Image 1 (spheres, one colour):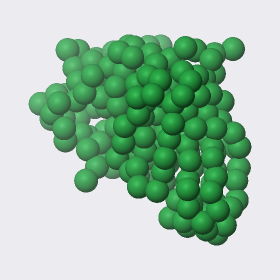
Image 2: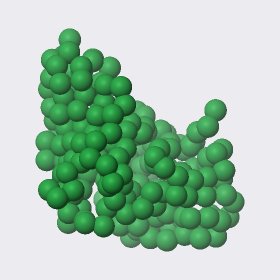
Image 3: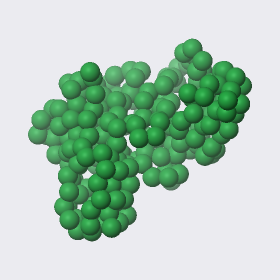
Image 4: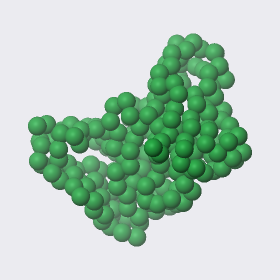
Length: 112
Length: 114
């Protein structure tokens, strides 16, 4: 059973608008969460992270929100740009630096 | 340049023919791991290693072997590949307990077993 789930396999958004990617988890021991971005023919690259002691972390156009009680996190991209078109993976860990458990990914298409 | 290097990038092989996918990192990372990516399932961990001569199973280890004789190298071995091992494979590394950047991934190896 998948402990990290991304229920939307794809998302299409107009350039300049907000992209919202969602991720749910079941393991209450997870205390560190990351988002990775993946372009075709490349490995995933780290985008942004959040620890369980926070409910929000922001880095430029990217903001991650964590709702521990709901076991839910989301990634907001504002404004979306065509270069943001990629697959985004949510990942979680029980301790930083240890095993990462990944969701199934969400493919984002930003239309010019 | 800090990186994780996997070889080969693409591989087509026949059922039962032993193969090795190499992985090397130049960042002196202790932790290394292999993942496979399949549609809808995301990345699933095959094996990991926390240091030289220390390896352990991940979530989907069946049919795979690994070794960690040197800190920089972590090869993935398929002794008798089967078609259900057709997948996209990624090697990753990190410092132990590093935050918040997680893993550095290689560019991937697309394996097809016919």
